Every structure is written in C-alpha cells, then in structure tokens.
Length: 109
Image (tube, rainbow, N blue to C red; front, side, top):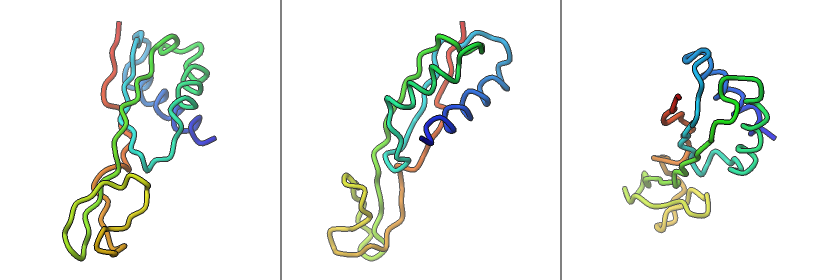
C-alpha cells in the first residue's frame, strides 16, 4: 500500500512548514495516473496524523483527470481508461495532466 508512504510524506511536509500549529484541513490534487485509492489515503491519513498537529484534520482529495496530447496529430484527449492511445492510433503522446500529487492548500485553526 503506497498510500501510506505518500500520506506520511504529506504529513511530514505540512508539519515541517507549520510546526505545532493545529491543522484542520489538508487539500490534495491527485492525478488519475498516480493510482491511489482515495479511501485508502484517507484511512492512512487518519493513522499517520495521530499524535501530531494534524490529528483530527480533514483530508480532501481533488481528483485530476488524465489528459494527453498526441505527438502525431496534435490532438488533445482525455485518457479515461488510462491508456495513452490517441484516436488516430498513435501511442506517441505527451501526458498533460493526471500525474500530479500536490498539496493544494492547508487550513489552520
């Protein structure tokens, strides 16, 4: 379960920047291609934040759809099934969105 490692990194980063300030909400932008399970991330967040300034904070996850641009025909398309295959048949694509995992914002008390 790589969700725990990801969440632990988020908790460490927020704690390092905010110190002992009480955190009430953390919002993440998570791309579809990151392959995390939101419910697993929330569970891991609850575990990882115990006895920290983030304990009891809400974790909000904003999903980011996968999007790519074909290097053959220049079409921009949604990768709804996760396959980097353009309608023209080319698999030569540049991923434009869906790989991000970003701390969007943090709300403190």
